[in-house]
Length: 88
Image 1: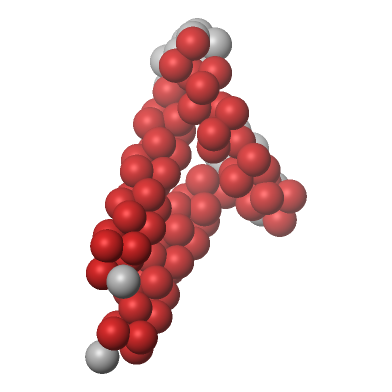
Image 2: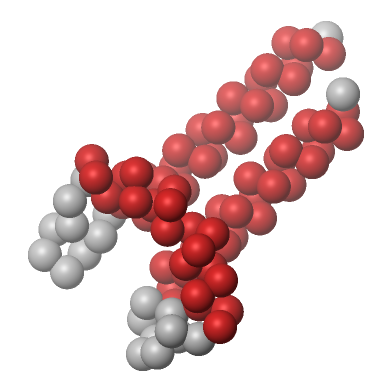
């Protein structure tokens, strides 16, 4: 059981980092059009799109990635509590 928690927790952390890298890539011209940028887009855009439907951009600022990362953090904490309940 503990190994399953570690795998899921690590996956959430890696996905969070992928989101952060993808967000920072928007600061560099052409970065999202690179091969790596395209790969990150295919991985992160479906998740981010769910939040963009709810939270529209404020001018040039898109707040949906912040909310998306916060939701992943909450999911990670919820997963920890769930496994605590199961294991103890």
